[in-house]
Picture (cartoon, rainbow, N blue to C red):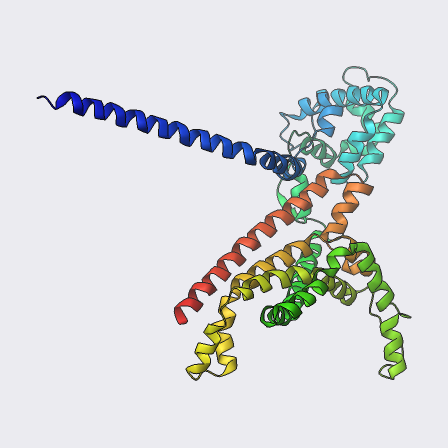
Length: 420
């Protein structure tokens, strides 16, 4: 009985201590968060924000809804099976007159022309020839007389599909798909279906450059990892030297080397190896060579880091047990470099996917990658919706391939570890 007050005091002391510990832990976490908050805000505004904006622009569709609001509202209940009623024609006539007065008709015409070739002419000619709001009940006849396209269901279906506020038009176009007059998703016409081939070309060039970087970079990284520190550091300077040179300068240097009267062709002609200059530039070969040179350090550095962490004792142990050098390399050394191979390959592949300057300068018309068309639609034609959709598809494909590649490398590591 006499011990109860002491036990109660001990409990209170323990509870108070726990509260102080929790308070101290919360204070520590707040201080840690305050330290990383600037970095989080930086990533939010420079990385996550632009990506989110790009994804939103790939589905955003405001032009027609803003310029032709009455028409979009009138077509909301239209089933698309026949031509719309008189009210839709009257709403369109009113919207065209208002947009012409406000100077915004070209905005809607440009957007609708993306979906139906020639729609810009239809809308602008109607705007020029429509002088006043038609009399009640005559809007259909008036617009049809100005341009017969207003008597076609496809014209109105295009307006309805572009009524926003969101659309799948740009994403479908990026995949060479479109909607027909009945609203079904079908393959785009052959003269418009170009993006699948461009994506395939982009991935094949990136894969070829990644393979070349791995083939050339693995021996260099192995040499750097096994040489004495003095020689290794000297060679590392040559590996890092391209980072000190502008990408544009390096690309132009390859143009000088590979052109028909460049150093390579002149040397081959002087040695008598060839009789006429080879076409080494403005083709796929030039693109792969120049991109491999530019991206090679990004393969060497992860490989070097992975190899430097491998103890030489493993290879000596394998040799002491009678394993031939090739077997020891394939069974002992190579599996331990898989993290470096995976990191370097993934880094080079992703960087190659988005390359623009190098293919644009040393490649031909059939060697332009998807980045060229994203830049084209962003800077020249101002088709930001399609540019964002192409970027979104490229981003999604890159993420999926990175996840699959990561799983494969992880599986190979586990399998290799079990075999060893």
